[in-house]
Image (cartoon, rainbow, N blue to C red):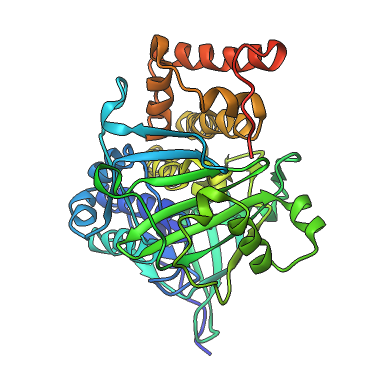
Length: 423
């Protein structure tokens, strides 16, 4: 077994995780001239869910200098998002190029194995060192820095030291779990059942590349085209509802497809899945995102329901900002700075912007107004901006959103719109 790695020449920053948050932080720090080490437990490329990006992702990727590589990788263009009722009676399409408050007209749908590998390779090309198949096992923080112990693929143990740690460990939530900081959203315990499929009948023409979100009574499907004949399809439902069915995930998925006309009509040429992937209890928050010499980014800062495809945007934005504030703290020689505290506020605000939509998405009043869209006062344009990924909304856009949510409240109390069935 190899001896522990010498700590005589410590790193500036060690990053746990090489996903979008970790790679964005690594690239940011490497470009600033910092000595960065990324410890990734898996071997890239690897399967990962969350393939639909938002137009405002481009802003971060241009800052990181990786957008040209992404745009030339052959990913499918995404010009809009479609929301359908499960019975197929209503559809709302948001065209990102037609939103009055939306600056970026399109995004891309990505197969995450390829996409995440592009981001991580770019970090290496910028000067970060990446060690894959390296599982972090322990962490110690003191006044002088952080000491990280990890095991490599051969089973040998190593220790590295750094001035700062960025936890981008994803849903494993390494540092927050050690400090017992994770809290699940009590009323939002979900299960997701998903896989990639061939033969799915997806929109063509001007709508080619659109993501489809199919709203059922108390659950929903995503359908994300990745290639001409590869589509990511997932079912998200309450964990309690799933358990009450007493069936295996694959059976639940197939039955939901069969009983949802808007999905079934697109699955006529699809072979039943031999297996499915499952994720449970994935929506949570951490009660602290920063502590002395530690910053949590991406899913390690909190994770919310993927209905509005905000995951990669939130991850890359928080990773980029985490890298910037860590660089500043090192320059100042401080273990905690006002910029780190501002990072926590900014990250919570970005998550909160989407959470207010997610909480309402599962309610009947929101769905009934959303599927009877009116762009009066440009309310739908304000929704378009949020769902395109704009996380710094001007005051006039925020007021339009408040107006829409106010109408949802009025509809709940007084039934101001048609009571369309959600099924």
